[in-house]
Image 1: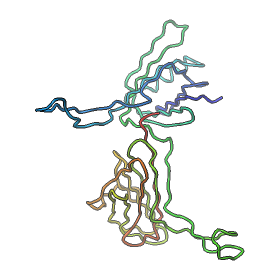
Image 2 (image 1 turned 90 degrees about the horizontal axis):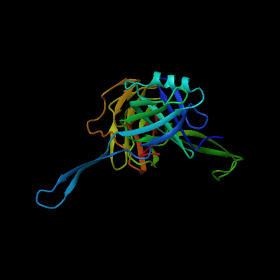
Image 3 (image 1 turned 45 degrees about the vertical axis):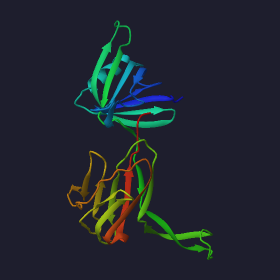
Image 4 (image 1 turned 120 degrees about the horizontal axis):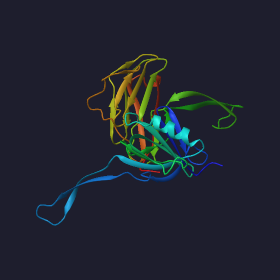
Length: 282
């Protein structure tokens, strides 16, 4: 029977399962629901009270209290071997069928054992520099669709019989950001069958990223707009080939429309983008 609540810690290539039938039992957890808020409050000079000069989420602090299950000594030794503030890890949390992940760095660990015959109580304090949880896997959207050409038996009604068609490049795609905060995307454009000149991606009403590059058949460019990862990779090499007016945009919660275009050769552009939704907690 699968547990309604399960945690998997991945650190130094090792996985530790916390939950029913896992390596550890969970005794206590905090910090999974929401990160700390950071408010900058400035006093008014001539009036009562003050005003909020800035508001943001601070790094998330997660505390887990565990007890080894099964081979307690082996689980304890393996965890000690993996813990180090120099190694970042990943926390995968499943709650009532919903799974989200977050990266962390071990901040401190405490072992408490009443006697040699009792299982140790382990308190892990984790710090997550990026306070938001995300989907466990990337979602990918392709900028192409099938265009029906004819049907069998032949008729004039689209959708009847057996359809035959071709792939056609579509210049727009929609994404519904159902998460709790802005997200960046990773857009990949590959030239297939021809040359693409100066490709561009644009978020309606926000801004665009335009490249000054000629993509020959087989060339691939990757545009990453995620905070902390913003970059342009041309055939795997980092390049500074974007228009100075470019904005490495973020997609706010709600509906977003992304357009792919080029100065020439857009029909040869095989484009897609991937994203991870981000959440305040789980």
